[in-house]
Image (cartoon, rainbow, N blue to C red):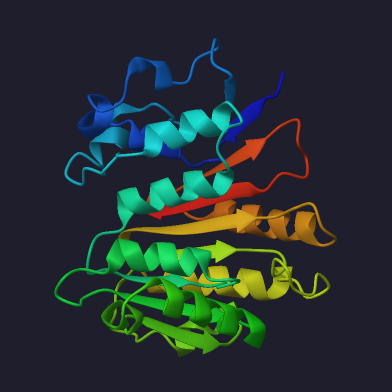
Length: 269
């Protein structure tokens, strides 16, 4: 049987608890709650996990839950990818008119998804996209040109720059709702060019500084290539030291597929 773990990074409460807090419970059937009979095994070493005071922190900030249940159940049963879970969580956090960052554009799929989430009829919203490879920026630009209208395309600002330099391109007075990372190598590109632990750690520190309250850092970590597991440990270490008073962090990880990508989510209270 394929098994899955929704593992909490030590000391910090679960995103599943956040998503299922009181304002959302009526939207989710009880079958989604974690239990021993579920196909998902939840592991937690968090002090105070399940404390009602944790859920109360979010009662004044209800989170849109449309699509999350379907994505989670699909992931648990092997019918949905981790990227689909990530996108469903993004949609529950990001609002029209927000400013977001795609820290690793790749071929542009995440950039396009984010644009659709923030663009509104008044022309508000902005996506800052970056990638260290010129070919990735070119692919992203081409996808946008073929997928959106002129007005939406103007909402995306692309930069050929390392993700560790995001503070250099994002204005200091602009609150960022979401920063998305898709670590590893460029699909269809040179597999020897990969994101690295050192610059990724710098990028995470930068992202944590520019992120607004009730914002999210989403990191998809591909661990099946050389250097991928090391980078994952760097991400996990960074998430583990974030103070529980101001951050909630968790990860979605397949147990019996060690090369499967891991989704790490960092929510700023």
